[in-house]
Amino acid sequence: MNMNMFEQFASPELTFIPTIFLSILIPTTMIHNNPKLLENRMTTAISWFLKTIMLNMVNHLTLNGQKWCRILVSLLLFILISNLISLLPYTFATTSQLSMNMALAIPLWLATVITGMMKKPSNTMAHLLPEGSPTPLIPFMIMIETISLLMRPLALGVRLTANITAGHLLITMISSASFNLINTHITLSMLPTALLLMLTMLELAVACIQAYVFVLLIILYLQENT
Image (spheres, rainbow, N blue to C red):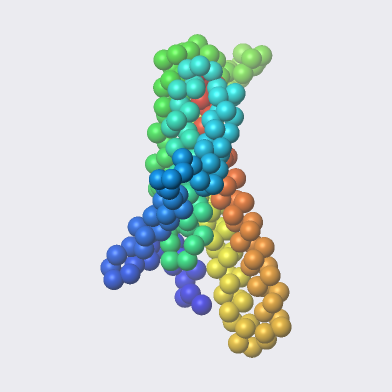
């Protein structure tokens, strides 16, 4: 049992070499290039996955916003692979670090705001004041909407960090309980073991959903400013 549950968020090392570099190579080993075949099952599945994501993005964005599709697809794949790799043993959950997520959220959010100020300055400024606001409340409404705008990147980063961190902590606690019960009550240990398997499946779904939600919110911000 770990003396500190948060030790799992430290990068493990093997002979002073971070094992995260080895886990990064896992996605590349899954794609096997056969010179006799144009495509195999893995590359076909990846191509279908990328085309589906690209079509969904194009349907929600204007012509100016569609220029962001390649960046957004790359961002989705990066977060998705990082979330999935972090579920493997002896790996490092990069998306559980707030500094990592904020480094992704702030530049992208700021880029959407700058794009809106350049492309549609009137519409961008109009979002700061809801239509039909009473005249005495206009300064307060502008202040509230400005704070709401500035909180968007924080919400992006904190949401991803909290979901990944909470899932890993639950897995650690339940797995520790299972190991402790195996030595004393083997039958009783089957309950937390089954719960651990279900939680692992849930974390696989959360890893995919959180990557999608992060990119979807960026698309919504971009949709407002293009």
